Length: 334
Picture 1 (spheres, one colour):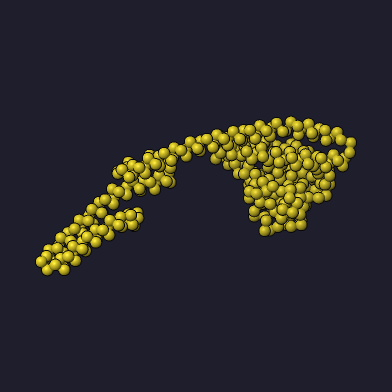
Picture 2 (picture 1 turned 30 degrees about the vertical axis):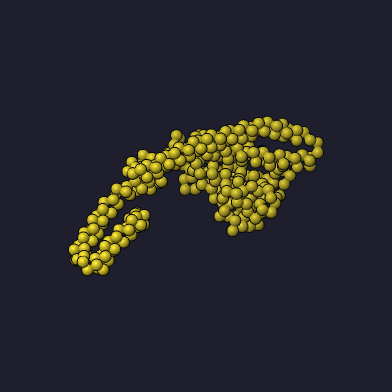
């Protein structure tokens, strides 16, 4: 701040220096003026100027120091009162701008909330004709056409489901209900939803649940399982998907292992990044780069650890590690 203050007052300090030097120069040139008394006067003036600058420094920088604190805190109460007309102009401008930004921010928040509510309402409305469409597809006599249409129906259904949960994730902590959840019915429901797709690709499931219950929120856990199972089916052909549960270090674990194409070591660290599509996803154009990202976003508030291992050409293994009961004491309201 001292350097900034000197830079700000540089022109005034130079003016004072020039005045003192010009006084000495005149006394030096004019023999009628005694030089020594002039030097004393100049020395006294310099000392007085330094004292004045020192005292003014604390007074004039107090307001600007409070501005630096206000910039970090964003609270006008941290600002000291303006000590000069120019400082008053600055504070009035800042206050006016802050009020305008608050109004615009409030308006934008209301617009976003309105758009979110409209989108959620639209998704719920679309689910009704989708359900009717599913029933009509199941009545088709042509099995080949039925499988093709059901696959496209599943893609639409999962994209809508992703969008629905993506809009709810920011408010997820207000919607958590932690309880003992049975894994078997959850897995069976999700597998049943993928049945037609699995049949067309010759994919089966081998489920072995040594640990059958976990502490979690059933609705959000179903979303995680849906994303992982959908990915496993999408990138597998004519093979079984192995689902195992057990215990490790006092935690229940659930693994989903497929025999698909796998993930390259280069892509593996980034699969949970928003919008990232691995090499296969870019080739077929079907990947959105959102499924695993949303899975990680949902898993964090549930305190579910999620890890991925993969060998290219041999498949991938996703492991969910569920928290113990004491771990949920950190979640507010649980």
